[in-house]
Structure formats: C-alpha cells, structure tokens
Amino acid sequence: MVSTIELASLRGFTSSDRHPVVSLYLNVNGAHFPTRADYETEFSILVSNARKAAAGDLNLTRDQESGLDNDLRAISEYLTLEFKRNGERGLVIYSCKAEGLWEIIPLRVPIENRLFVDFKPQVAPLMEILSVYERVCVLVTDRKTARIFQVHAGEIDEQSDIFDAGLKHHTQGGWEQAKLQRRYDHQVRNHLKRAADATLDFFKQERFDRIAIGISDELWPELEKVLHPYLRERLEGRFAVGINATADEILTRITLIEDTHRNKNQESMLESLGPELDAGKVFVGGLDDVLQMLNQRRVDLLLVEEGYHEAGKHCPICNTLEFGEQVCPTCGHSVEQVTDVVEAAMELAVRQDTLVKTIPLGHPAMTQAGHITARLRY
Picture 1 (tube, helix red, strand yellow):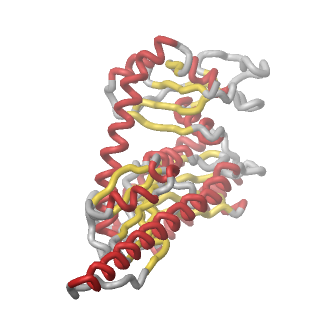
Picture 2 (cartoon, helix red, strand yellow):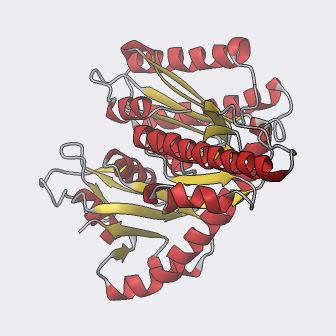
C-alpha cells in the first residue's frame, strides 16, 4: 500500500535545477494486455507522443532533453528486465534520475495510460485513484478467534491475530451443564470485547475511514454492545464469513460492500449539487470561478467531468492559473499558455490538500455546473 509519507514526499518534490520529471501511469491489467509486449507497446506510444509535446511545451534545452531520454530509457529497461506482474493491474513510475527521484508504485486497481513530462511529479492522477478507495478496517471474528485486516485500493493486509483459548461448549447435563454454559458465554463476551478494543487501537493508529465486520447474525448483537462509538459511526457493512476465509475471499466481499457504498454516496452528492450551485454558497461551477477559488486556496473538493479538457494560462511567477486573461490578476506578470488547464487545476488542487474526483461523463449535475465544480472551505 502507498504510504502517506511517500505521497507527501512526491507532492513536495520540484526539480530545483529544472530537470524534467517523468510521471508514468501504465495499465498492465492482464485482461487488457495479456503479454509483456502488449503493455510495452502502449508505453512506446506514450513516449513518442509525450517526447514531442515536452520538447515544444517546456522549451527544453539539449541537456534537458538528454536527461529526459535517460529517464525514459530507465523506465523502459525496468519494464523489460525487472517488472513482474503479481496481480498488479496498474503501474505508476516517477523518474528524475538527475535529482535522485525514482519511485515505483504498483497498484491492484485499473488505471488509464498516461505519461507526463514536467518539472514536478504529476501526482493528481494517483491521488484521485487512491481517493476513490477509502481505507477500510475489516474485523472478522467468531466465538474464539479474531482477525483484523486493512483494505485499500484493491490491496488487503492482515494486521494481527487475536486467539482466545476459550472454553469448549459442554454437553454434560444437569446443573454442571448450566454452570459451564454460563462460563462459556462469559468468555465469548470477553473475547468480543477484546476484539473490539484491538480494532479501536488499530483505528487510533491508522485512522481508517470505514469499518466492515465479518460475523454471524447470532454474535453481532453482543459485539455491537461493546463496539466503540467511533467504530459504530464508521460501520460500512457486515457480512457472514468463516473465520478461516482467505484474504482474497474477504477482499471480494469488501469490494462489493465498498462499491455499493461509494455509488450511493456519489449519487447523493450529485443530486444535491444543483440546489447547492443555485444557492451559490457552498459550491461554485464553471472553469473561471473554479480557477479563481483554487488560486485563493479555498477549495475543499474538486469535481471534474471525465474527459473535460481546456487550454488555459499559467503565471510562471506566482503559479496562478487562468482561463482567459492575458495578464496575471494576482501579480500582473504576463501569463503563459498551457495545453490543459484542467489537468493543471487538478494538480494544483492535490498540492493544496484538496480532494479531487472525476465524475462519469453525462451526469446532468455536472453539465449544469459547466463540467467542473468546487466545494469551498469557507
């Protein structure tokens, strides 16, 4: 899983000596590209297009072009000689060898083929991919054993095992049977309390977004009684599963729960978007207004319709983004043309700790918003 430290490092990296930085997003899904040659061909096409665009858009010197070629060659050699698919469906590589940047991030979720050349890593697509998938804690428990997992972006890691010896259910009759049964039930309740406490400790450590619980209907009421309110309010769903289920089996169940939860939340947000835009207090729509709010660092959430692109302007002095102005409204310096100001806006948003989401093409709310909209912090 991608760590928050890795993401922070990437977001903060800028080439101090104007060395080009390559950001590769490559689909290596075996369902789409069965052989190595298939995705290597896709990479070659990306390189050809990006190499030509970078030479013109960035006005690279001969030395800068040489450095770019070295990075592209290093990525090509890695794909050919080192990379092995182990269930990965996407591969992200950031490279600027001249300044020590070489970051490889395999992903278990699908991604779109893209290659960027700039003077900083293009992390917005990665952040957007990861933002789609919340960090989910999964507690699986029966009467004696508990297992805790973390799920994020198609990956699952088992965090710990909690084994309680427990007291086997007795079949001896009479008063002794009743006494042993009460003792057994007490031990089950204690076990569930320890499982709930361990999950709370994990939440304090990792601050996951949601929790899902694998437990029988019979035991759920007892666990619910001892589940901390922090966990209950983050409960995404529960399901019945055997305590010895494999990680892949659990991941399949959680993926279904996540998809349902994510689709429901997105539809609810988009349904409220129209009235919010009309009120003009929380959301703004349209490229001009959104760029203005981004320049003021006021955006909390950026929604962009899939496939929406526009040429625009960028101030090299203060990094202000513009759509139509020829002079920077912030510092008065002349602005430069950028091929896609929407992509630049998404990158700027990520570097401001703004959540970025792409919305499928054709939703009426996004059409009304002008294909791009922003929720404001204040």
